[in-house]
Length: 182
Image (cartoon, rainbow, N blue to C red; front, side, top):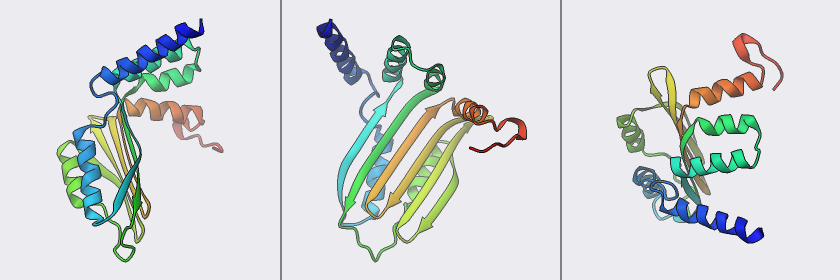
């Protein structure tokens, strides 16, 4: 029995590696990372975590969650996510006298793809940008860039995100102007 489960897990892992866009980050995501790092100058970069979970791997995850009798709310959240990319990079030997900044070219590049900035913060040792992409009145994508003295974090989530937000708001009791302690 244990051998059977091990075989299934191995098969799922091999399948995930073969599905396009399911493990390796996209070229645009890599371009964003490299552009930010080039702005830092002589910094050394160590990839701590980098992964794309595409529709194929998400479908396998949804199937595994349904077989494993996972909470219904979790399944509803998974149903609305189409693609996730995450990158966490450790930064070393950064010039501390130079303020950290995210290159404006990134905002222009994301704007060409339909993203709009909703939050931009900048301090001497950190910068954060959050972009959204709308399709009509629907929130389709969220892109987060967080740059600090020793770490760069990139996250892109695609799907029916407005539905996820609506579910989260309902769960916290914030529907129709009713506010409760969160």
